[in-house]
Image 1 (tube, rainbow, N blue to C red):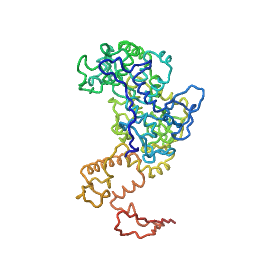
Image 2 (tube, rainbow, N blue to C red):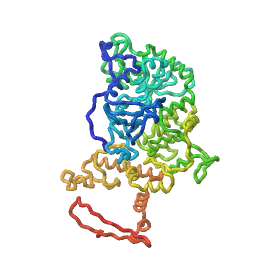
Image 3 (cartoon, rainbow, N blue to C red):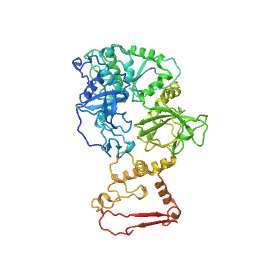
Image 4 (cartoon, helix red, strand yellow):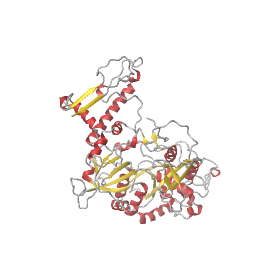
Length: 583
């Protein structure tokens, strides 16, 4: 289901690209670092005002309504705010969701300030405002993550003399991850994509690899093309005709294609041109920097800068229970639960949004089979529904980042905890976590009461990541789904309980299978509401009297209308009012 009205595209934001012949007459860099990105950002800034703020320089008037105030301070740059040109209301821009990944983001139709999304609740992945949608679309179009966008904005607002004093590779490290490798410690997947493998060897550092902060693929950086018709201040761009595995089939004349083969390569080439250095010198800078910067504490700081939130330790036995319990440590070597398990902690990343929406992501120990892939459920934008201990893939980007740091030999977990707990006072209360609604409940009673709510049931049955094209199926029983005998002349129309095409029947079967899988998963994890449990017991019982009965001792039920009504109108609304009285 789409959550916003279609809008016509505004003026495109794109990198300036060089063309073959008279390249030096095109857009030049006037002392701006990362020229292509800054040029693209300038077009976004022509439509929107962007600023970075912190709790001391902004006032939050409502959920997505902010106001700036003038105060002399050292800003922590905690929040990105955006407003339309000429507007007066600043809107916060949160981190762009990883899944789903549309071509253009849109604002949610059902979002109401102060209430949130009234349809998808805490699972909504649409933007909360047009301003947020515009920034997300920019990040998607140019392949940058939220931290990269922060850096671009800081660079665009900094003074020229401040930029010239930057270290030779600091700006590039803010945009890309860089590694100098050789054929022994890297694995060539295709002509531009490599993977890194850990081996004990004497590295020659003959290859330069780079990857964007939001990417998981390493791209090789070749020698920057110069001379000929390529001007000294040209802006390099990715070739529009390059396809991995096939190369460029357009620019074959002369010296061949002189465009970059990846976003990472174009960024490095523009950086080398601006700094007037060669690739060999950059590799030397990277090697020298890695010799002093690759420490566990620095790696932990990098992870905390990349991901907001904090790291906490909970009792492992309680966390893997169904439902999930958030149990901290007691003063002795036991957890705070009534069971008082011997303290066996698990590292958990906690992300909270406005104290209402909570995400608790466990960071499990580094698995023996290090495939470094995401869980199949997580790739679809859903929670991992695998049983505890059965999933060996990463269940979050945070877990993947910690695994990669540990795979490189850095013990970051103690530093993540230490840095997170410096200003945090951890509660000793035992809580229960609903991973469907992303809510924390203080007691078992409140948790089971929450599981009986309509909102919880709707989120269990909804799939906000898949956009189905056909009608809602009449039920979830696959064996009872049929094709209509006369779909063209069917008098029931859209209310017909049978499919009106083979495509609709196939989609109904897919939805039935998915609903069955989700139901089985949520039942094993203790998230099924009581009404649904009772209904399932009734369906599967050999004698329904053991489950439901028309008479219960000391209870009387009456109705103000006849229970049997005849009508010839399909759209007629019928109402019965029941009164239940107990002794």
